[in-house]
Length: 200
Image (cartoon, rainbow, N blue to C red; front, top):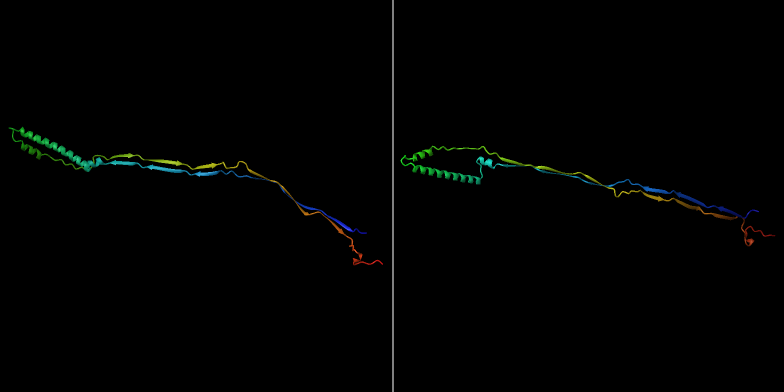
């Protein structure tokens, strides 16, 4: 007699995936913040000053200012007035002292006529121009370029991050127990069986 039941077992199927643990660290090259301060160069010059005073030189050539000409004419007038006064006094004394010695007037006229006038023409200065120099100078103000380094924002330790590993379980087939009936069907009442044959 054959068995009427077939029992079959289906095992479980599990797919396992793993991820390794990692230690991630970031390293950054030290890069300081650099700021540049440009230099500057400044030059200040004071040119030399040459002073020339040609007042006396021009006066020696007869080129005088109106004020000085008036002063010299006044001085010349005072001298001429003094000389005229002295001449008149001398002539008066000569007339007074000439009693009994003849007439002194012809002698006085002769002395005036024989007086020679000296004329001097001068176009070459006989006084040099006065000159003096006020020295100049050059001042340099120079400051070189400057680089400033800022190390305060640089990390002294690297950043380390630990990533743990993972184990993933995926069930692709659940366990099963398959029971299969191998016999023929049972009809109730038995006459419902298409192959029913009544018992004689």
